[in-house]
Length: 85
Image (cartoon, rainbow, N blue to C red; front, top):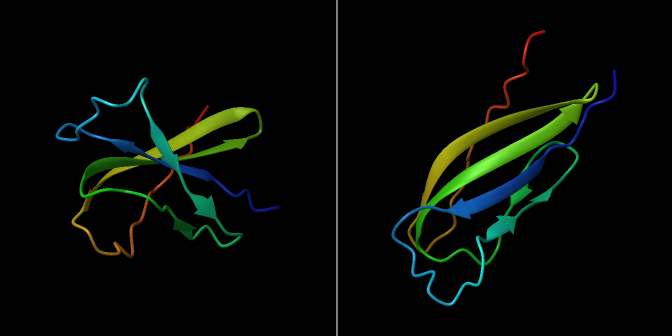
C-alpha cells in the first residue's frame, strides 16, 4: 500500500490584524515524504493548522490549534482521522 502525503495549511484565528487582507488567507506548508512539514512567514498569534489527504476518492482532515510566539514551533502533530463507511 502506497503512503499518501497530506497537504498542510495554517489559517489565522482571531486576534490578527487582517485589515490589509483582501480575502481569507491560508499559509501553505511544505510537506516531505515522511509527513514532516514547515510553514514560513507566520506572524505571532493563534492559528488553526489543517492537514488534508485524499484516499480512495474520499477526503480526510485533521485540525489542531497552534500558538506562534515569534520563535520556531516544533513537534506539531496533526492527526488525520480516516472516516469509516
